[in-house]
Image (cartoon, rainbow, N blue to C red; front, side):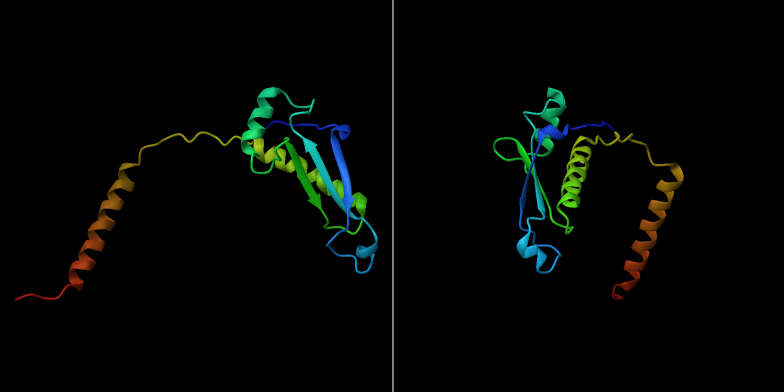
Length: 134
């Protein structure tokens, strides 16, 4: 698994009114954090990794190559900013995950025998359900 450290300077934060918990305080403070990070302008990632991320995250990227993450789960702006950073790292880790190649194996002789026996049994059950013909 590839570990990526994004510098804080590459992240651009804006704040907006939250729709989350907070009562009347939500109506007065900008507690929701919105993180904007440009994939193509990033110096922390090499070009091969950028290409892989662009393919995997194409539905989440804007036309300019920005990844936008919003968090409003907490009442506090700092906690929402931390949550945005956590979501960014989680998204990048998921996008860069490469599953193991499956090694094809042959079914064992006993499993083949069990499959055929089960088919014969099912065939018998179905034949017994038929009407008796003279």
